[in-house]
Each structure stands twice: as C-alpha cells, then as structure tokens.
Length: 348
Image (tube, rainbow, N blue to C red):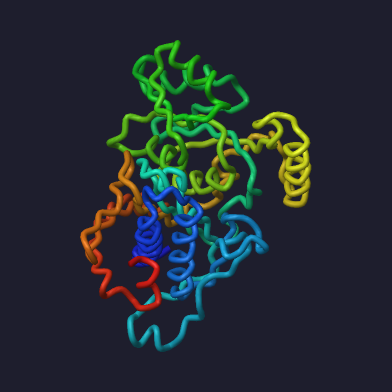
C-alpha cells in the first residue's frame, strides 16, 4: 500500500474522533457511537477505493451502523488525477470500530479511541460478532505464546523471553466479572495487572509500543476487536493467538445465552470456523500489507484525546504501515469552520 494512503485513512479516524468527542461525558454511548459511524462512513465514501467492511457493527439489518458487507468508497475518475493526483486504490477489506470504548466516551473516561484497519482483499478473518479469548505480546516475545497451555505457563515463557521476573511483568486484562478471579490470582503472584474497563484494542497496541510498560494482554473480549488487534499487532511485529468462545461459555448457561450461542454456532459453521480452535496471528491477519489508524477521543495511555477551544480542535493519531513497520504519530490542528460542508455538521 502506498505511503500517501495512510494519511487518507488517518483523516477518516480523525473525523470520527471529532464527531464522537461531542458526546464525551454526556452518558449517551449510543449517540457517541452513531456520531463516529456517520463521520467515518462519510469520509470513507469520499475516498477513491473499492472497499468492503468485513469487521463492523453487525449485519445489514442493523444499519445505519457500518455493517458487515457494506461497500464504501467511490469510483476513481480522470478528474481526480487531474485535480488532486489522488491515487487509485484497488479492492480492499476494512475493519472498523468507530468508537472503541463507547461507555468510556459516555462517562468521560480515558482510553476511548476510534480505529480502522485496511488490507488487501482477503487480509482479515471474517469473524462473527461473538466472544474471543486473546493472548497478545510484543515483538520480543514473538513465538513464545501457546494458548493451548495454561496461562501461567505462557506468563513464565514471556517473562523468560523478556528477561524479567514475574513481579516486573505488566499484563493488561479487561476489568470484567469473568476475569475477576484471574486478576486476583495474578496479583497474588506479584504480577502487575492493568485492568481496563473496556477497550482491548488500545491495550493490545500497548504490548508493542516502545514507551509502554505493558508486556502482555490476556482475556476474553469481542471477536471483531480481536481481528482489528491482530491487524495492528502483525503490523507492529508482535504476536497473538486467539480462539472463539460461545456466549454461554463466557456469560453462563441460560435460555437467552443458549439461544445466542446456537446462532453463533450456525454463523461459525457457515464461515468454516471451529469454536475453540486456536487461531494464530496469520489466521487472523494474513497479510503484512496493512494500514492501521487510530485517533484518540479521550486521553489515555496510547493517545491524547481531542482538545477543543471554540472552532479549533486538536487530534492525535497513530498510523502504522505494516509493510515497512513504520509507526507515526500525527498531531493535527483542525479549524472546524473550514471543514468540508459534507462533514461540518458531524463535527461541530
């Protein structure tokens, strides 16, 4: 993928972050999510790409969210080439999370971001919207994880690879009831646990960042977020293993959970996926030719959040190009009075 395309996709996540930021601290997570979706869709449809959403927010009947199978982009014309030199982009698969951390946005909490990963056709596992168990490490521990083994065996292997004692390790885990006992057990061993309320994509990225203390991420979260994480982890040179989990396995047996689990089983069978089978990084993201972009909505460990005074706003965006393993932080100043009229109502 060409270098200049990274900036085009950075503009997409910037617009989504600016739109969602209007809802920070207002207690309305659905409104924040919708604002991010609307801005992201608008910006994607301005690009001269033949794109398909393969990781999104549900099916077509759940529109107006960016749904799985939705086509985005517009036809490339001679006028583009003559007027602005925009590069033709071939067929691409797109994985999106317009607001990663809707609850954190609604409550004004840290680490809410908007994310997008783009790869050539067939790059990403088309995972159903269900639970996924994830184990993620940075480049120094690549090849040292095995989800078929107990968690403590993996922790010891990672500690050895990093030349750290258990008391020096930092592990990210979502602060959910399903992880309560695991967190207690790890802390009893002297391991530092960074318990995030939501947002394991940001936590995943922290395992690979040079200025982060995070060594590993473990836990059960969303499968769509897992595929997005895999895209950026591959681009950053880290490692990941995962396996799909039924709702009844995670949330307990009940009539409603069993009904949803049966639907999940059918979806997996239709897509040729086996529940509980270990998925390696290359199964989740099969190509290095990836562009990943994330923009902060609220400030956190990974990115600064949107800062705004009147019609002037500042954003910080992380852009990763998989082929070159290049990581860039883009700090942008936006004058919202001069935004394109097609998106100005979304961000002001």
